[in-house]
Length: 131
Image (cartoon, rainbow, N blue to C red; front, top):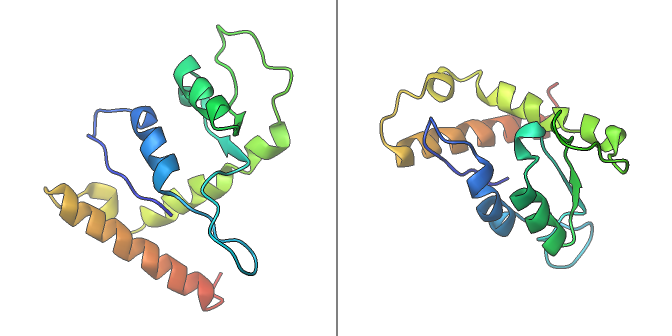
């Protein structure tokens, strides 16, 4: 998991390349972690030519619905898009911690530390077998 912070008034789309460059997925068995996923799902806020071009250059499938004023994508994978709810549920679980939801910390480093602690606690809870 990669955690990057932006200003509260900024959209997260400009930091997508940083997220993609720092993330890695462990392979089953042996081998280096994968740094390029097969597909990336996002909401309509990511439906921009810049994001689509970046993903295409890296040979990553964009599972992003088109905006209402754009032509519909005939290759849009609805089943893969529905898997996005896993990330949305994770964000909701992280926001169960009051310090994360309300951002008491003024400094970004402190807030990121709180996010990291919350993510670790969720991971430990999940690895212990709790629902």
